[in-house]
Length: 542
Image (cartoon, rainbow, N blue to C red; front, side, top):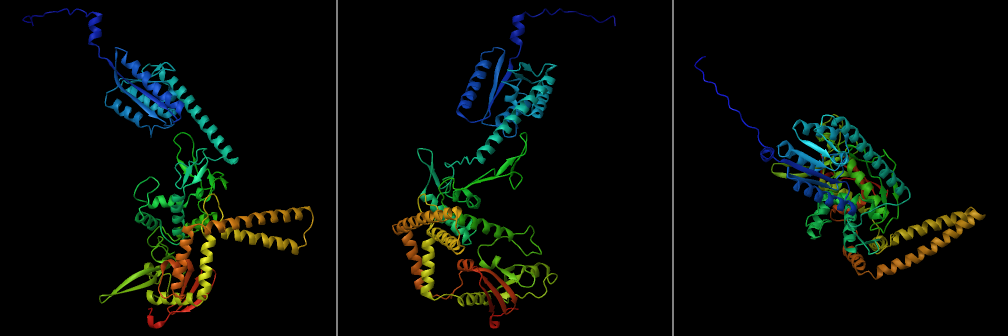
């Protein structure tokens, strides 16, 4: 111990200038946000970015760690705020020492988010400085104040949201609805801001509705549009089935607007949900020029419900229902007379020979557990029997041609701002005539009856003027004339009896075909006609 030689050295204190020279500059970032994309908010957003850039760069004790800014994004959640989340990732990577922001409400309007992020950053030694409130989260007494101010910011956001929602509801009740016609396929905006129909795109919308009603699936319609090289609503080359579905369920194409289709459960973290009756809705009819008739729109909605009803959640279901198949008309029309289950098209292979048959789905999936005696029907025999049933009630050829061409003329979509077809005008005239006759039979009298007689007379006169105008318009419409003449030519050349199976025609004529037995079916036509038809035994069903 005595051999040790101890030395003591005094290290002199550094001068202030030396200490400041050794001190590392704080890496400072700024976070900016505006909650809307309006023009005045845009200038505020740019001003914030410029302000913080200047503030950081002119402070000799600070070095720039980045300006993080979210534009047009809500502050009630951090989920979709890309720059905010990028800033947090940079903090976790130890690349930021201090964050500057205008106020607690700019940072977050969710109390829980505010507390969680300030605690997390504080644990990492990273402070947040809220300029408006003059709070640095690294101060020991700041958390309680931040919690209170964060709660106030959240309450403010909830109040604003409730006021905005009330304003929207009130506007809808008064029939004031906003439609973004710039993004609605088939429409344009005039210089005065009023909507008008884009005839070329409107023809595509009409094609989509008509083909769907005729039995095509959205995927098949999309394929046909691709074949015609028609650009999709985004200007792309390929149509998607989802786009077709969106057009088919959009009531705006018949001139109506349905308010409050969706709603949000709460302001903070609430998900947007489909309104299926939880809240009242308002339907504004005749809001703008229609591309299709209201009757066609609702017919398509009913067809969608019918196809949806043919779906089942499992591959094996006692209902025998499966996904809608547009390729074969009988896929959703041929039913078992014993158990009510749909029939399914099957291919049998026997000794290298293929046979197409239709079988009850319940028998296919469960054997004889639920359906005991349903027969297997050979496709060729079944089709022959159905065509024979249809031919048995067909009108004479010339009458049939006249009926069909007249119907086509009556239902051709009008152009311009006209929302009624000739057929719709004709049917309305018939309704008014029937009401007029009924009032006469009842010998109605008095002020109320006189008023109604006058109303009917005025409406009839207007409808007849419209009927003449539409007829003249269609006569001058070369495209309409060509369409009718082409249909008429096909009908004249064709045999008035069905000789070949046509899936599309069957969809238009047949509602249901019920298999009673191996040699007996019952055909229900769309007009309500019911025909019992024999299936010839020699064509065979086992």
